[in-house]
Image 1: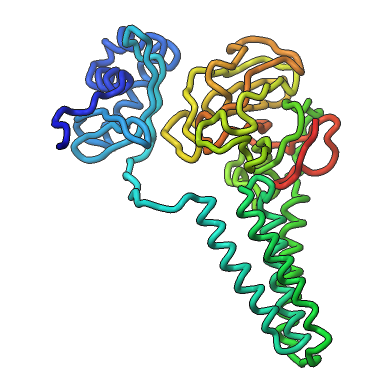
Image 2: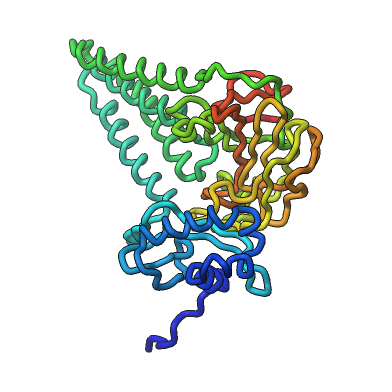
Amino acid sequence: MRDPRPAQQPPEADALARFLTAGPDQWPRLAPRVTEAVGVATLERIVHATAARIGEFATVTDSPDGLIVSGSTGRVRAWAQVAPDGELTALRIEGARYTPPRRRPRLPAALTWTVYLGLVVLWNVLTVWTADDRTTWLADMATLAAFYVVVEGCGAPAMQPRPLRRTVEAGAVAALASAWRLPGLPAGHGVLGLTVGAVLLAAAGSLVVTARLHRWRAPLSRPLLFPLEGAWYVVQGGGPAVNHHTRMAAQRGALDLVALGPYGTRTRPGREPAAYAAYGRPVRSPCDGRVISAAGTVPDQRPGEIRYQPPYGNHVFLDTGREIVKMAHLRPGSVTVSEGDTVRAGQLLGEVGNTGNSTEPHLHIHAERDGTGLDLQFTGVPGRLHRGRTIRA
């Protein structure tokens, strides 16, 4: 029988509800630090904009996507933190209406991709094994090679679970094994198919090379110290085809870095952040500078899910006097510096975590000047920085 009692809401929901239903004269009492940091005028603009999106305020409830502020005409997502005494200590409200996603039972992502790529590989392998002549075989092999160039060159194969990697590798071996048929096949005359396959292979190679060698021609004033120790794998970095950050001007040169383990990016099976090889690894300052922003109290996300939080999560931003260097998604409770501190290159700043817009533990780093992203360069790390590269420091 269903429990008729309403689910208990987290204290953040209650504190945010009190704040939104109070007048500006009460905000310094309900959220003194937020009011001092932001100002009453800015808070009024935020609250009025929220009211314009949701209508008359109704409730604040918790959900898998974060706190949901509901009103008579709409909903928005929010994030808040409270002190033990109920004081609202941090606040962020999304600037767009919230539409709940349609949640349907689905296969795990790794299994889905294993099945999808397995079917694609199987189809291509069957085509080379059933080719009627050598020209057709070469055309089919060129098409299959183009597929592998894109998957290996634009993907991040080392971070994928072992079953997915083995499926793709087995397909390549099976396709190459079909070469034993060639002596018994006629020459054939399918020049068009061979031309198409060669064009696809050339296009795939060009795409990968261009993406990996891409630079914005906006260099740092001096190379940075690599902020991590050991071997790290680039999952986002390079040109638009291999770096989702390029859509944002300030982050266009950003890198996302993960560590690798026996289970892709994990050291053991599991969905908790600590199961990932990167989690808890020390992050050191890549440069001398002054801390212009730091946060360390945002909770970790559950890997594979994203609740609404400040996008950078726990972070440290440094001003070098020439550019701003930003590191994000740090572990809660690990940040060792505060706004206004002066740090030296190599100084411990925190640990890798899974906070903010992060689906698994990793370090995000980018540098910007006047809102424009710069090409990252690290001392002792030659060559281009792109998805699929391993950096050893």
